[in-house]
Image (cartoon, rainbow, N blue to C red; front, side, top):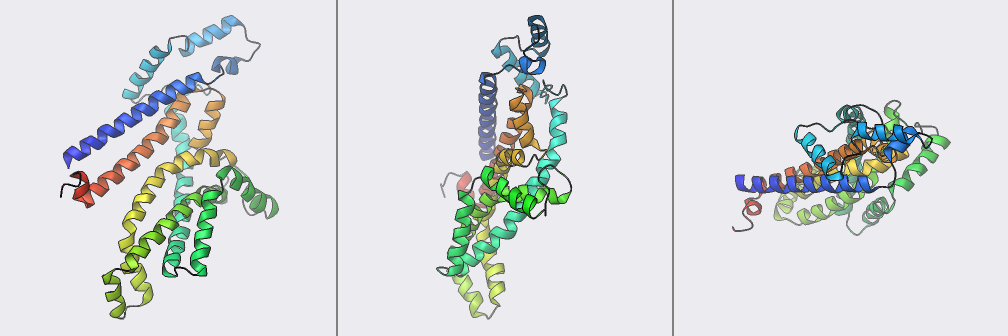
Length: 309
């Protein structure tokens, strides 16, 4: 087990290093000069060069990359070019908003996806099954950048139930969370349906029914509990995707989280902040996948032994 854990940790570190390197190179290849954005086109050449030297942008790219890696090893992400503040402080300010959005999204996903999947499996090949799967298919097909403005138009402008944008009370998180959860609901409900269909035909389900247990207890206690393993795995993998998907959703709703900070930093060519935001998203995704792999290896020894059982 220890060897398997070390292998997965080395693989995760390699992926993170690859992400850091690629993002560093790409962000420096984007057209645009942060010095020109900060000072404006009317600034003199002397002022531009002085600011470039002060920010360290006059050094060769490989030197900047070495300095960036050295800072990461010391848990120092540098200072923001645009905000003139430590990047870690900016992330700490934005993380609570993103965390609230992710938690609300997961809550909506579980509340809607589990009943949809269970109903579709129990009432297979009926109108309930077709309706639940059609709803899930729509969730996969509708992009967030289209669904978000539609929800704003209907529930904010026409009905006036929720704020249009920003973070103003609990109601402001509902529409962004609903937008972000549609795709997760679609994927999770189909997985619940597939897992439940496999479980419903097992012998212990027939035994539970023969004992005279109530149908709800048979389905929820015996069926759902045994069908949750692949569902939990998929849910864990989707946790990392929440941060990546939140970039678009937070931008549409002007939600002050890490996703919106990423877009703002790209527009202002704030290299350290963009690199830190992408690093945070990628590390979260890799860690969730790593924990999922380790949990699977702990449950099933065949995985860590490479199937040699």
